[in-house]
Length: 425
Image 1 (cartoon, rainbow, N blue to C red):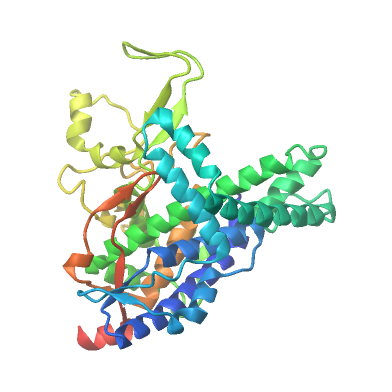
Image 2 (cartoon, one colour):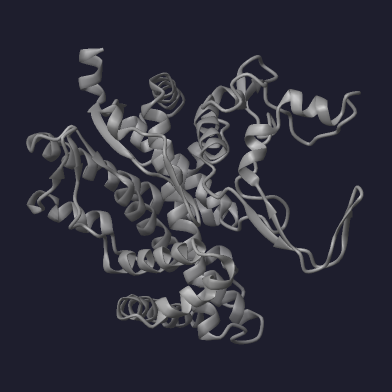
C-alpha cells in the first residue's frame, strides 16, 4: 500500500478511534452507575477494527461502534463479584457476526489434528448457522464488488490506484486496466474475505494486548501522553493525522510502544511457507514441498547478546539488526527501541533489535503498514483520552488464547479521565 493511499485512509481510522473514545466514555459511566468497576473490551476493539477495515476495504460507511453506542444504555449487563462487567447480548453488527462466526469455525479447524481439519471444515459448512452467516458475507461482498466495478468504469483510465477510494477499488481498477476481468467474482470475494480476516482480528488482538500493557505499566502511559502533548499541536479531542504518526519522526516513543507491543504479544506467532525447491542449510537438506514454519515471535525474545555470542564466539556473526540485552528481554520496555540520534536526542530505530511480527521479504504481510498505522492512531487517541487504571487482579490475568492468532483471555479496562487522574495523583 502506497503512503498516499494510507494517508487518505487515515481519517477513517481516526474517526473510528474517536468513536471508540466517545463510546467508552459513556460505557464507563454506565458501568459505574450499575455498580461495576471495569468492563471487557475485546469485542469493542474487534468492532472498531472491523469498522475501520470495512471502510478501507469497501468504502463502507456502517459503524458497529455507533450502532452499539445507541443501545448500550438500554442493554442489561452481567457484573461478576469483582465488578467485571460484560454485555453478553451485544454481538456486534450483522456483518461482524458473520465474519466472527467464520473465524471461530476456522479456529476450530486449527484445533483438531491435521488429517481431520478439512473434515471439520466440511461438516461446519453444511450447518444452518454457518450457511446463514455465509449468505450474509456472500451477499454483502457481492454487492460491494458490483458497486466497485461501476465506480471503476467511470474512472479515467489514465488514473492509478492512488485515486482509488478503497482496497476493492484498487484491485478492480487494476484488473480493468490490464485487459478486462482477470479476477472472477469468486476470486475477488475470496480475496476480500481473506483481507478482512487478516486485518480485523489481528489488529484487535494487538490493541487488546496494548491496552493491557499500558494498564500494567503506568510509567509508559504517562511518558507516551507527555510525548503526544509535547510534540503534536493540541492533540486532545481531535483526530490524529497520518503525517503526525506515520514515521515516528515526531513521535518516537509512540513508535517504540507499538513495536514493543508487537514484539511481546506474539499475535501471529508463526509464518508458514512451502519449499519450492530443495534447500540446503548447513548440513541439513529441506526437500521440495516441505512445509516450513517460522516462529516469528520467538526471535523477538531470544535474539539476545548471549545468543549472538553462542552463535559466533569470535563476534563474526553479521546481522542486519541489533540484539537485545539479556536482562529484561522478556519484559515490556518500549525504551529498548530508542537510540541516540545525531543531535543527542533519542530516536526510534527499527534495527535496535530483532522483532519480525509481519514476516520478512516480498512475502511479508501485505497489510503491515496499515496495521501499524491503525495501532498507532487508536492507541494514541485512547492514551490522550484516558488513564488506564488498575483492574482487580482476578480480571487481569496473563493467560492468552492461541489458535489462528493470539489474544488475551481477559481484557478489562477501568478508565479514568485525565482531569480526574490529575486531581487524585
